[in-house]
Image (cartoon, rainbow, N blue to C red; front, side, top):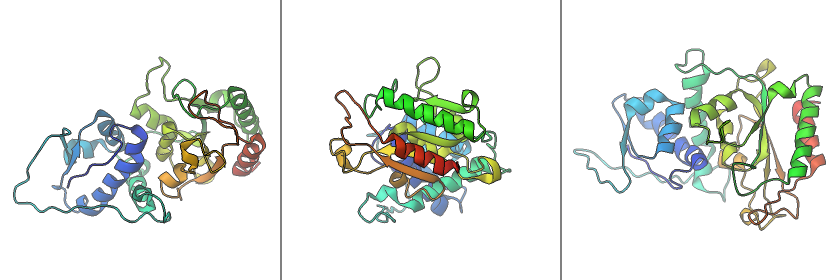
Length: 290
């Protein structure tokens, strides 16, 4: 089996566009035969993500080749698969189909979340992660004063539900304490410990795929509030409403809110993302049952 895709070396796109298809291929064409291997074009980001998902798979089932390298397979047949199903989004891109992300979540359950999983190490700690674009990205950065108010309301709501923001609130921008890009395993560990993730649409939010379903009391499902573009902000990502609810294929595993940027938001030149603070507070309180 061989697979390639677009947006080479992009962390977020590899997760929702590549890894989900590799998971689907593994489920349907590799699980029944331990000798079947998959050929993948090598990139350090791709290998790092797959190693976090399943190190044994990377070690024993993947054959890496370089881009522009030619290989030949003797006595084999060629099957070309181009995804056409993108349910439930009839006008979306094929990579958004729920079925592919379901295969990835099932794989993560096998490798991390079942008691018998070989990598069952991280336990959800009911943390709240706020994803800020300041310090880690050059686009879609929220207005700093407004972001301070968002964090104030988040801390206040956490106290009302019996949490200590000093211990349970994590401000995440994709970097470690030294200012270097956080490695994939560290991002996996962090988001696996979270019950709630809040933030502006961006690559850092792709980490919601790692959120452990065994989070919080009574196994409450993971919770997400994502701020995204819409027709109200046509200058930002073409006015599309592509958030991770769509990119991961409807996210039936999460309690999810998608809040649009307010009119007047800017993206690249002096980025200044605005949101309705009251709408955010309403979504947060409803999501947490306050």
